[in-house]
Length: 279
Length: 304
Image 1 (cartoon, rainbow over the protein chains, first blue to last red):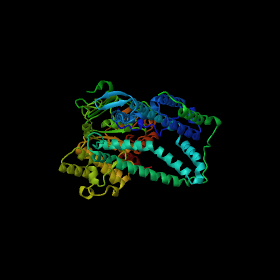
Image 2 (spheres, chains in turn green, brown; image 1 turned 90 degrees about the horizontal axis):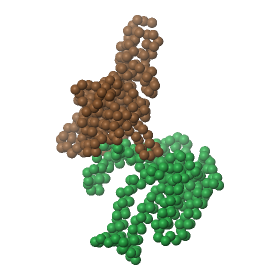
Image 3 (cartoon, rainbow over the protein chains, first blue to last red; image 1 turned 45 degrees about the horizontal axis):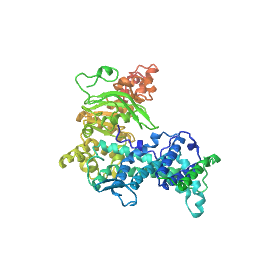
Image 4 (cartoon, chains in turn yellow, brown; image 1 turned 60 degrees about the vertical axis):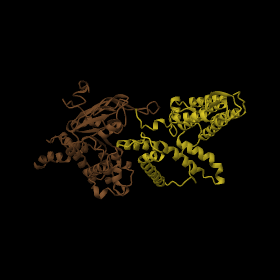
């Protein structure tokens, strides 16, 4: 029992080495495939379509040899939010959303149409699908691979003055800092609780609630800024100069088999766009 | 109460008639349970801390010390095993955690990083304010806590926290916990990263807490001389289990066993032990520089 173990439920930004096909995939191919899958999730408005998406995403999890329980753990903190969202949709959409749809539930002023019920199911499914895709992506990709991938993918846009190297670096650092900040927040929550502080608990208005967070937020920002400064010094000490003329130690493989993933994802997206699902 | 029969003599010093302030019984802890990063930090720890004593907890990095002390004030609560703090059973869902945290004050490593208020006095008053004490009582507690750690109240209460030196800021953070007036003070690496002068002073302050205020003390440290100077009794943790306990003299005498556990006796002890091993007639149980000096002086007066 540990009310403070924050990192346990954060699956984004962690790397889980299992040596699967997905782990060995060229990061460029993996990024494209992930983007295409995300697009497929966004463009599928039907229940059957989402069912097939859930199956596809589960297949990806299996392909990455990632335990399902762990991939889904990121869902735990979002459950209350999802429930509230579903409840709001059920209570207040009523006949406003697609008035032609038949009413399937009616009690007092609460009206649930078939279209709203479908919407609730689909938004929940979409959330799970997106979570699975992003979790598997980060769990199977080292941050250095991610940086190289983004940098190489953006390289053609350099003529348009897109700072590909710098953008990639920003993404890497942001991802790398998630677990670091979470651990520090955990430490501070414990330290302030030891001093008699209560972050949760007593109710109050928004301002009072925010004030209760100050004992954690102030030192957390100090910590983040200090870490940032240390990072700058460390990079300068290693004579970091930015992307110009910089070579890499790891050469991206780019084997033909790697491109199977984005091609499969593209095929899937096209299928999702053109197949007419009955419901 | 505690089943002493199982552990008496081996793990805990049984004291007839005195019940322990903190009792830990067969405690297990797993980090990141249910994820692929699962890690066993504690494997069946049993120990007792009695009122008024000073207990040192030593062990290699990763031996479970920091995890263990988080159970002492209810930051963690047992899933497997039992922890009793002054009669409060931490395993019960209805345990009064606020009361437990008032009894046991836990000072984290590098506590100066948790300071958040602009003024020193306000930061130290954070705990007592949370207790909703009357203004004068808060002021008295802050004054007492500051004077106890060696920050004069009138000179420091209105100083900006960022103008304090590292040593002063650490004292202020310690005062922030003391202002809750705990019966047990648990300190994790209290003097690490301080200069020798500040280190010696802070040790003196911690010792005073025990001798003058009668506070029970739990000290976690990698500085073996510090542990030897400040504690009556030691527990050695290795790989999440208690592997030895006794007075500092009993524990530090066995240099070979300590080396197996990734530890070493205080340097003063090592010097006299090595001299003994080379055939010199010196007492091998000196723990501090002063004791080593006394042990070696007769040797030197005999002349070369």
